[in-house]
Structure formats: structure tokens, C-alpha cells
Image 1 (tube, rainbow, N blue to C red):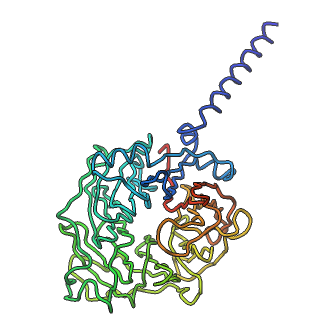
Image 2 (cartoon, rainbow, N blue to C red; image 1 turned 60 degrees about the vertical axis):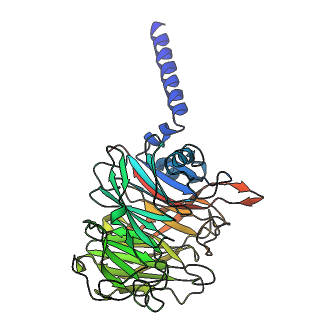
Image 3 (cartoon, helix red, strand yellow; image 1 turned 180 degrees about the vertical axis):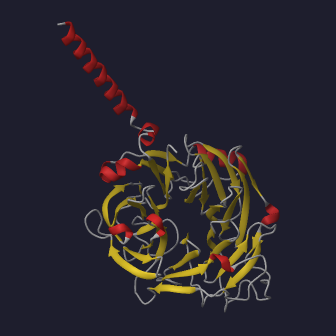
Length: 442
């Protein structure tokens, strides 16, 4: 009898424990029980003067059943807005890009996050664990994208409509962040080291920086331009210095995908406004060892075209990533709803596959990231009412697309969609853009 009572008591205690775990699985508890999180930013407004939303998903829930995944939801129209108003005198609008300190491959880091707001010049720093805002810096007119240097001491900011490259000094451990005004590089006024005009109708007609990407050793930063062309910049000087220049015949407009595999930096180009550049998709490779502190002659080393889909009526490349062992480069196209994979050993197209069907008839994949074990790819899926860009990146299922990696990275399949919604004035305004994977428990 006593034995049966003891067994019953143990079962009851276990049941209570399991219930406690289930209750704790909401909010931060769910993330801590997964080996990684997926952060996705919806840039649609949460209030009349801006805002936006952050969704944080446990990676394990997205793998298991994306449609049922339960995210944490952070409103940038609340604490983040209040902090920016207090520290800069203005409210941030349209959260667009996010990066973590450390990065997925680092042995530490991922405890802080920096976020760029594309309608304003704000860069917001947050605690990645508590999701609380820490510091807000106004860098100018439009902070389109940010990128941390590998040594974690600087953050490069693409200040889009100011047509400037800015730099923030970063001490992530002490939460000390400072805009270095003496480092700012004007990308439009004056001449390059070779004496050519920086911005010129025939060479580089619109030098608004789109996305900066620093090489893995932290020597130079590749800066794509809205009107075509590209600058390679030594970001370690004050002011930062151009060490290589490319014109629009060599690198087409609106590139935002930059990623390094071995000693090559892959850079893409993409579509712009519907009137100016409605369709564009090219991928280039540059040797990262081709640049030092001495400026190169124009278009040197030459851009090596890997492939081009410019002949297609609908094409717009944007997000890129590398699969396990850097074997395959993935390039998403948010107009054609396709993913192209490139063998990085041969630089030949390995495959092209569609994401349409099943979970989404029109996914519009934008930015991409990959799980720590490289088995799943996550794509920010655009909504029916794009909030930024003025282009035709229009999708029907705003949210996180969950893609299973197959055949060693050569192909994949869209397995599910974690939908988000933001209805206003009778319209679906949700419009995901930034997406990053944060590894936990290292």
C-alpha cells in the first residue's frame, strides 16, 4: 500500500513538473529550450508615428511545425521609441536590418543586437536576452543597413539618402556605443583616389549605399550602391578611405547580398524602383586578397560574373547564405519566388528551385539565414503591401518561411510558414524584412 502511494506521489510530482515546464515554455522560456532563436522584424508601423515589430521564434518550434510556432513579440513603438525620443529627440521608423555581436560562428557574443531603421537614421542597440533597448544613436537621414567588424570594435552603417558611410565604435561588453563623426565617408561628393568623380551619370549615377559587408579578416568593407557600381573601403581609417572603385557596367544596381566563402566575396545586384530598375539579378565574385591600403586602378580586380538573370521579366535577388562547409551559395529571388544554388568550388549554378506551392503560393523570399547545424533555412517573406523599397517584392504570406535543406545544400523545400499579420485600414500591412538566427547555450 505504501509503495503504491509512493508511486502515485512521484507520478503526481512529475506531472506537476511537466505542467510547470509547459507553462514556462511561453516567452523567453521557449527560446531557452531551443538551441537557437530566429529573429524576424516586421517593418510595418505599430503606431501612427512608426514603431514596427520584432518576432523571436524558438528554432525547434519552427522546425517541428512553423504554423503553430509561438513567438515572443516586441513592439518598437513602446520602450525602443521612448528611448530614442529621450536620447535623440526623434522616433525611429521602419526597422529594416539586424545584426548580432559575435555572430553565429563565434565562441561568444550574440548577447547584443544592433538594428537599423530605414526611414530614419536611428541605430538601436538591444539586450538580446531581455529584448530591452540599451542605446539609440541617430546617424543621419536613413540607416539602411549595419555590419559589425570581425573584431567587434566597430559597426559600419550604410546611411542611404545621406549617401554616406558612417561608423560607430562598439564596446559590447560595457554597452558603450559612440558615433565617430570623424570617420564618416562622403560617397557622393568629390573624387575617388583615381581622380574620377565619386558620383557620376556615366559611372555611378546614385551613390546611396545599400549594404556594407566586411571581409572575414576585417581589412575592408564592400559597399554596394543604389545606382550601380561599388566601393571597397578601408574602414579602419578616419575618415574611411576608398581603396577600390567599380562603375555600373561592372556591378549593377541595388545589391544587398554579400557573403564570403573561402577567399572570395560574393556580391549580388537586385531590382530597384518599378520605374527605374524593375528587374535585376546578378551574382559576382571578388578575391578578398585583391585589396590593400594602396588604391587600385578603376574596376580592379575585375568583377567576375557568376551568373545573370537580367533577361527575365521578373527578377530581384536580395538575400544570400552559405550551406554547411560553405559548399553551396544560396541566392533568393523575391519576384520569381525561386532559390538559386551555386557550387562555391566551381562557381557554377548547381540548381534552381521554386518555393511556390504548399505553404505559400507567393512567398516573396527576402533576407535569409541558416540554422546552426545547417539543416534549415529561414526566409523573411514579404507581405502584399511592401513598406519599403518601392519595388514589386510583393507576397501573399508575410512571415517566416521554413525551408528544409536537401541533398547536402544543393536544393531545398519550403516546409512551412509562420504567418504574421498587421491589419490597418482594411489592408494587410505586415512586411517582414530582417531575419537572423541567434545561437543559444554556447
